[in-house]
Image 1 (tube, rainbow, N blue to C red):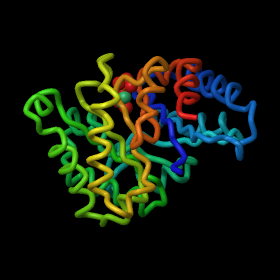
Image 2 (image 1 turned 135 degrees about the vertical axis):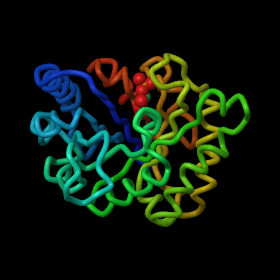
Image 3 (image 1 turned 60 degrees about the vertical axis):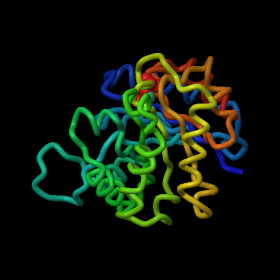
Image 4 (image 1 turned 180 degrees about the vertical axis):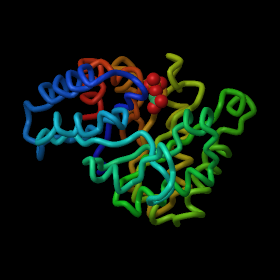
Length: 250
Ligand code: PGA
């Protein structure tokens, strides 16, 4: 049995006040049950400048914290970058790698994504590898080819075993921030293809769905056999809505 994970990607939103308030609200919602009895893992991805603040706010609650990005380099003259070791030092357990906004807006190639994935694991972070097709690629029936190629780039770099130790998030680009969600059947079909690609070692790898997940569609998505939780953007900025999504994964 795979323990589901629900991740909240806050992207570039908020300030110290809203970040601590949101974290405190989630802790209050979440602390009605002992950590050991929870059947879902919750992870928050605040902007990097709020990591230690959020880490402090969720201390002892069982809620984990992760970063939205990291450098592929260990240390050195890389102005503006943040290394995996620095993120661990701030209390991170997870890091997003290859989010479509990083690929599209910041030109991260699959090779760079693979290097970042490797750097994350070298620092002891659990990468959440994000993959997904554009609308045009879906219309051209390239979805599975695109997604499996994005994953293969990482397998080629770190090996199948290491990819299977991580988390993979399928996020169709056309569904991110658009209010459009893949149907549960569409999502399951891609998740099954990913599961098949990972083979025997990937049977217990967590596969998340992302792209306009809301409390109203989460139960159906999370009910699919190869969907083990979600990566939530917009809806994670509202405590009650996000908490309701987390509950749907139980
Ligand atoms: P969304 O974002 O839930 O706002 O569509 C998902 C993501 O980018 O991870």
